[in-house]
Length: 109
Image (tube, rainbow, N blue to C red; front, side):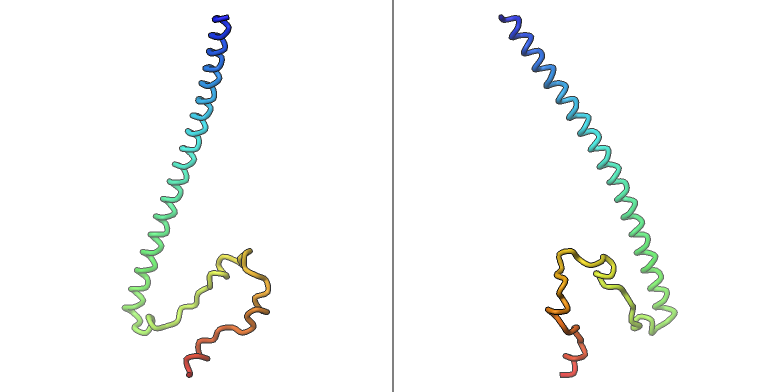
């Protein structure tokens, strides 16, 4: 009787060790994936930083060569144009808001 309970305890321990080894392998794989992502994000941040530096250098060079360049309007895309329409945004916006905001309409007052 004592021998069978000891065998049962050994089997339980063996099962527990296998489970812990499997969890350890999964954790190691997760760590490796996260480290890879950290490296990719670091490269993206470095690339973005270089692009910002390049843009700032270009804007300072343009400011020095063309004094009126700083006052020139810059055409840019809105957030919706860059990201696409939101799925949470209602489809009936034109019905709810029939007029587009026009700042000149309010500045004349």
